[in-house]
Each structure stands twice: as structure tokens, then as C-alpha cells.
Image 1 (tube, protein in one colour):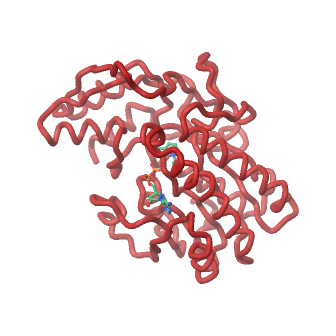
Image 2: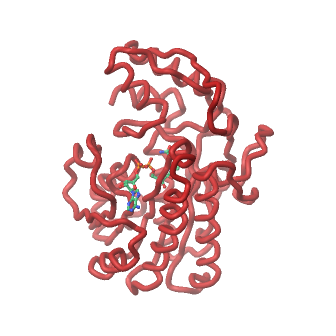
Length: 324
Ligand SMILES: NC(=O)c1ccc[n+]([C@@H]2O[C@H](COP(=O)([O-])OP(=O)(O)OC[C@H]3O[C@@H](n4cnc5c(N)ncnc54)[C@H](O)[C@@H]3O)[C@@H](O)[C@H]2O)c1
């Protein structure tokens, strides 16, 4: 798998204790990589802890450039997967400054560390499908669509994309040492997510408390995918970069096929079908911060050029999540 490039490769993952990062860490160790993670102190419960994957994991705030650079220098990674972020839209309205400093400033620090660590050859920076200016007209975004962002989370990730683009052109030119790509994926579901304000964790928490989950935006459309799908995209991107294919040092969308989008209400209903304890009530909020109701991704570039496509459709992803 992945042309064997990760075997005995030194890989640094920021955000390795999070939902996506914990799966990426275990996947990379299974591929034979030597992994070092960088994250904040572990929350409880933690999927990373449950997995008991044996690899180096360092506590460090990516806003602390000096501490981060020390980790880079000690570990000497060849490739960096940058996932650490404040990833929640609603929380970003409550802590906008922190969201910008972690997601934009933190990304800049990670790229600075790449620049000042001679061993680094490739970097995959994980942003989001929310980095696009979203007129909510139903058209899917291709990678060439304008960046934007209504809420602080989306704006901070669009800023991270601008930082990547600037570093790529200023310091990581095609003939340079570092090939850097960014990855824009949609909403992911799967086991191991305990984040607040996310549909499936909210439903499981409500069921555990013996109540129905409150679904606030049942008609919102999102590109749902199982967490392993975009991770395979990140790993394929990393593969191409490690193979020194400079044409892959660009931005990439990863999401479900265009005919596989579901509303929040449909996902909740499907979850209930798979696991009948998962009950929910539709309870729209009267006063709520703005969240985009419609978001579609055009993933034809990843499908055609990277040969990547999702394996499980939304229904299969929900079933896998319920099984976990
Ligand atoms: N989960 C989704 O549906 C989704 C969708 C699109 C994009 N993303 C992006 O994927 C990435 C991972 O998301 P996730 O859902 O796994 O998030 P998560 O909240 O589960 O994990 C975040 C990780 O980042 C670390 N982190 C946060 N702030 C940090 C800081 N200041 N310094 C060091 N580490 C820090 C945390 O310790 C944790 O390991 C993020 O960049 C997010 O924006 C997620």
C-alpha cells in the first residue's frame, strides 16, 4: 500500500491525539513508519489512548515556535502531516482569536519548522472544505474556487491556505527541497470522535444520558465521509510528494462522490436505523451563529490525477461508525 514509501520513514504528525490524527498515527505505524506526534495534553476520553499505539508523542502547543522547532530538530522528520487545529465552527465564534492563532499562526510555525529542519522533504497541510467563499448556490467547489470564510474557523483555515500558498511559492518552489500540498476534506464521521457540537458524538452522548439528541440544522447538506477516506487521500498525497512528484504540491479536495451528499437529518435517521438507541428531535435554534447550510465539493482532481476515490458511501460510513 502507498507504494511502500512509509516503511521506516520518519513521519511527524501534528494533532496526533485528535480524531483524525489518532487514526493516521495507527495507520502509519502499521505501514512501518517511525512516527512522532505533537499535540496538546490528551483529553479524556481519548481515541489515541484507547488505541495504545506505541510511538513517540510530544506535548507541545504549535504556537510555541521554539519548543516546536526543538521537536523537529530532535526527530528529524522526512514528511510532516499537519492536522493540529481548533476544528470547531461554533467554538470559533466563542474563541475567535485562539482559533486564528492556532489555525493560521500555528500553520505558519509548522511551515517555518519545516523550512528550518534540513531532513524535511514533504508536508501535507490539512485544512477543510470550509476554506472556500460559500455563496450556497448548490455548485460544488473545485480547488480553483475563491477562498473565503464567514465564521472564524473557516476564515482561519482560508488564512492557513494562503500561508501554504505563500510558503510554497516563496520558499518551497518546485525545484526546492520541500514539496508541500494542502488537503481540503469535508465532514468526517467514524469511531473515536468525542468533539462537542458534532452530530454523531452529540447523538451518542444523548443516548448515553437517556435522552434524545437535539438536531439544530436538519436540512444542512454536508459531504459526509468515513474518517479513513480522507486519511487515505492524505497518505496518497504524501506518497507522491515523497516520490518527488512536484505536480502534486498543490491543493486537493477529498470528499464523497457528487451524488452522495446527505442532510444532517438524513444522517441522524440513518444512525437511528443502525442503532435504535440513537434518538433525536428536530429542534432548530432561534438565535444561532451562522453556519453554512449547503456545502459541496468537486473531487474530480483527486479522482483523476491522484487515482483516489472514496470506498464507502455515506450509508456504509454511518453503519461502520455505529458498529464501532
Ligand atoms: N473532523 C472533521 O470533520 C474535519 C473536517 C474537515 C477538516 N478537519 C481538519 O482536520 C484536522 C483534524 O481534525 P480533528 O477532527 O481530528 O480535530 P480534533 O479536535 O479531534 O483534534 C485536534 C488535534 O489537534 C491538537 N491541537 C489543537 N490545538 C493545538 C495546539 N495549539 N498545539 C498543538 N496541538 C493542538 C489536539 O491536541 C488534537 O490532537 C483539523 O485541522 C481540522 O480542521 C476536520
